Length: 291
Image 1 (tube, rainbow, N blue to C red):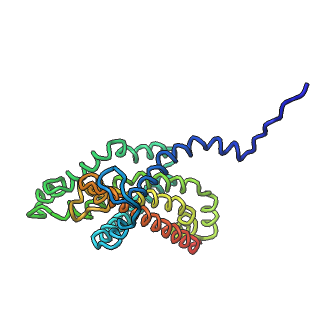
Image 2 (cartoon, helix red, strand yellow):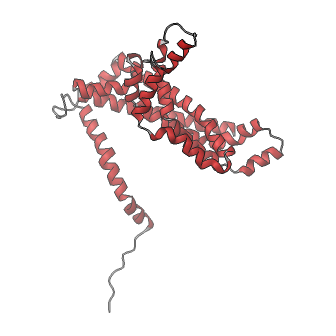
Image 3 (cartoon, rainbow, N blue to C red):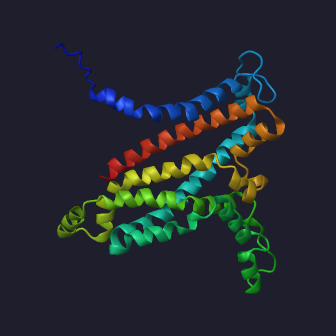
């Protein structure tokens, strides 16, 4: 009896088959909206209806107006400060859990993430209450007699945005750094100690370079989304703490200038992408220099 042809699937075919649903979801939820956003940025319309021919006038306006450039740089500066502060605060916490928590590592990780089980908006409002003119800090300082009037610089400026975003994204920095530290071979540290290296030298020569992938990942996880955050600047930033996402939201929701909003959004994504690539390259070069 003749047998039918055998269908042999290669490993690559099986891999593509398994990735098919994921790629389909990404195409539908990520690629398609970006393509539509790009189409809007090339038109002259009001609202969601696409009309007219293609034009680069929106991008010309984005690049030529000083106000937009100022917002771009302010957004990048605030996100850079948030990233720096978050990583600096997260690294010691992750280091303690990885090297000194012993059998209680899981409990420490749970404890560090408990504040982030609540709503993001609730945490932002909590910081607004803490930093407000009649908030916890000002009330305590006035009660202690250290100040006569509330400190105005605590709220509605870039400072309050940096503080709030740093707290909001701390857990996202702690976890990747912890994973990177946990993977370090402890025998390397023991060998360095046997060769005469002190704690600081062991940290600079072994721990820090080997944990840099986690640090880079944490920095990217914080920098990219905070650049496009608009909830926190709206609630605690005020006019001085406004970021580019706030203007994009205004263009879409209030003014109805969707092409300009789309051009601002895509330009912001491009700027953040370039900054992220430069950061990764610089961090990798620094890691090689340390090694």
